Length: 153
Image 1: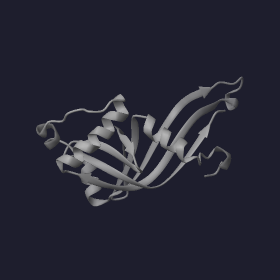
Image 2: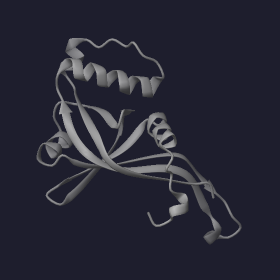
Image 3: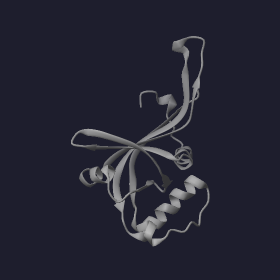
Image 4: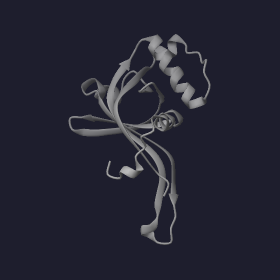
């Protein structure tokens, strides 16, 4: 990280950032061509959980290359100034790398959906029919590394 003074090193602040937002930008690569998609997610214990249709571009790419990059940001707001070059942004962000694996079994999907729904709604105890579970898969991204930063000016 170029600007070391902006680094977030407090583990609890990093977990708070990943646990409080609802959109992650997931970046994949196929044959040296990047593909990025914003998706809802849940975070727990060093992993991101993303629901998906059982087929499509994300899964096709992951089947060939399970390396992923992701980005989450929070509190983004512009800080105005009197001159154009004086404007700034306030934010917290994390960029990370990991490996994606596809969760296809019902119990694994049920657990992942609870993590996602808890993050999106704040509540737990949802029910998921077998029919609904069978129509979806979960992408679990096991985080291998990440860097986090913030700016308030």
